[in-house]
Length: 350
Ligand code: SAH
Image (cartoon, rainbow, N blue to C red; front, side, top):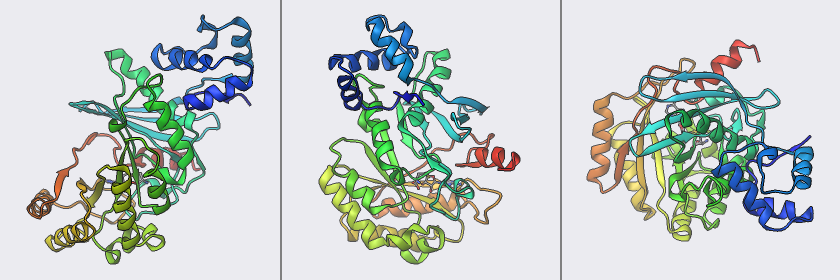
């Protein structure tokens, strides 16, 4: 099988081409063609020798996933179900913020984390996505945006899958996206979201790039977190908070805690106080991003009322915590994480 060069970091590609007897500069040329000139055919890379182009053609490819389903929402959100070479399908979503175009990238095919509220976990992980496939999600979206003279400016790895359960591929993809000869997306415009894999958080703190980290917390205590996130049994709250604190100290970056408000479960003012106490207790300077729950038919959870969301946010702010409520996109399409994929693959009887 041909190796897909999308998603190679520049240093991986340089190493690969040098091992084939090429100069170091060759990888930079290919990078520039792909990411800056949007050329995905080796034949058109005219400043590279014919011999090496033939070699590239024979042993490598720059294949993108195919679009299986496309849903456009009235607010400009685009949700795609993209299909990989082996038929695996993942969701990828474009959210048009006023500050830019943010893409939500899936990192695995299905997910094993088993969060009780999430539609992605309805289907277990069948495999990890490669760095090339994650880059493919972005490039496919860029091809659609080009019609309006736009391109992806922000990346959140918050689609289906747990990025720290596919650590190396996710990091290669991010490095290629961030590279000045790659997509040149600033590190501060890239966010990775984890359900709380402590080993991954610790490793991420030492990567030396300024990418953002978001933690799906969703509860102020183990008692509530254990009911909705099985991962909290492997990594209880005290271990998670210590890892976050160490991350902040090592990386010099503030984390964001994501917190879905689920009616009657974690949305009381007592929970807001407990959350503020928890964050203060560990001396963490986090942001909290409150997420209105996107209801999933297969799940029993209900979205908190707008009043409850506002009251929760106000209480956190009064307690000195920098709090935002997540803007919602795609209300008229299958917007909840994993919903479109679940519908399609269940319909196909997989
Ligand atoms: N596994 C990673 C990234 C994927 S989930 C993580 O857990 O962070 C991305 C975010 O969407 C998480 O915060 C997740 O808890 C949240 N989420 C999942 N299902 C949701 C739903 N139905 N409504 C709102 N947010 C949801």
